[in-house]
Length: 394
Image (cartoon, rainbow, N blue to C red; front, side, top):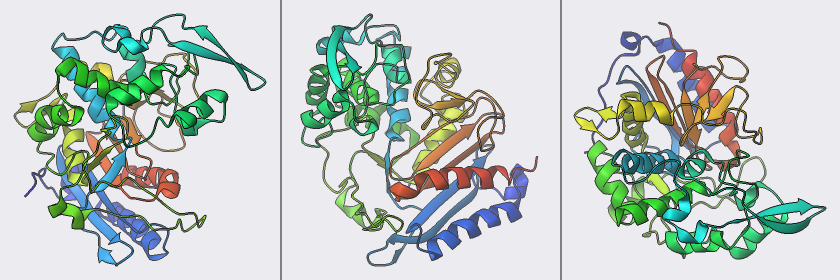
């Protein structure tokens, strides 16, 4: 059996049982109306789980009920785990945040930057190198192919940077042959930066990304159901989406996690259960420590969860008002501005298929919602956060 966290009655950790019941009813009602196939939600406070429930179907194709230990594709919730791996190497003195990435990945030493006018593209040299910090905070100048329609995005598509039949080293080689969308350090642009960090971990550690994560993070934290693939014995626990999105009618296609991954995407390739990710969050809330296991120092976690953008601009669709970005997480800078509750200093991220999490150090609160419903993800991220914070009583 996978390790868990201590269990508490909600009112013993300052959460309202009635408010958590409203959360349960809200998720169940949306399952009943066919908006999402199923979900697993977990809320913990002061290191104790006060809410952990499953809703709907694990697989809507056969109606199999959702168990609380269902395994989900977490996509970009992989990024914080890989960012922790990088910072573990940093703590060992094996790299500096200010290091040019070209010190470790020479093919990225002299990138070209696109200058786009009227859809024409010219290339100019980068004004400064891409640093490790740039990759962690997404100011590298890299992008995602689905984040626009410029010649750079089209070049990403034509180069098939997202193909699954490639190694991390091969993807970095492909990215190195493409222009940057922005000068390094000048703009926050959500990107394949964390995929590059996955390759950095491999080069510095001498291990594959999956092997390093297993030995140094997943194994020590007891995240027994997390990784880049699901063993055959656990295939019956994989949560599946609707075959067609209930709103748009378009087909839904998610990663095939039943086979070993050739491309261990540091930016989006992992799976996990809600409890596995809860243990990861609790380690962060504990300043790098869970039980007797310490992965990072307290000041390292503080550095990771501080804002690293300042006045660096970025597109508003992924970073809500009042938020910046740290080393692997979005970070709340203001109590107001955003259209959802939270505390200054809380940090979070989510995944493309609908999973989401946050850690609130002020309230000693962690929460994770697991769904496999890509088109519905923005709605449920806010709904879940609203209803969890509505349960905080003291």
